[in-house]
Image (cartoon, rainbow, N blue to C red; front, side):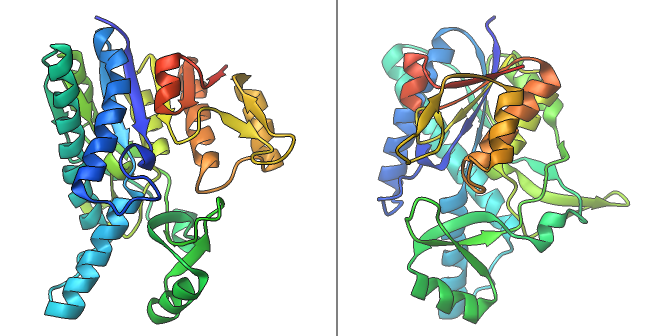
Length: 311
């Protein structure tokens, strides 16, 4: 039996910024990502996957709003929308794996768990929404939507437009995490904490969903810690982490310590809502376990390049 590995898939693994988000587009993207993840399957590693859902959950919310305006159907709250995307994206990941495994002559179960993640109802992030979800808008469109709905929109750091931002509270506990470990140890590929998990609060034993999106990297990091994973990978759309990103003195980071990454964070080298939470998630795993975390893209996973964060 190989290593126990947790991989957090970024939105790029599912939906590219220049795409409309059709089923075929997302399936093709997922299949390409699963091709890269086959490195773990071939090594007989036990694989647990977390994934983002920013574009998808935003699109689902837009569909609900359109149904409400056009047909009077009730729009569902965000925690419900997260549960929807956990199921649909898990289905896509399962289909992508089955396609690439069939080519490789491999047969494994892919199990998707609809996962609740407990947050603190008094988390300060509820008063400071920062998590981008949904499609990109022009500034004029975003201003009009903000005026009509009271929702906040922030400019994308890469200049792709303006996106809705929602609260992103810190994950405290992942429900049924022991079952995730059992399923992985039994040779199944497990998809969990999709979209960071369904955000819930627990009060006197009563579980209630809340309007938020938990950062999928932080939730995946917590899952990796709680199942005692041997390694934690964050897949994104750049091959390595950079300092002075997109500047003349841009520098790729290959092998860095936690203390170095904390220094870069303090300098403001990493953008909130983009690379900063990924770096924090990697640091949290390394500090809790003493093991290594990696940030890279799918190609870097195959070529063994990327950014390694170690104690």
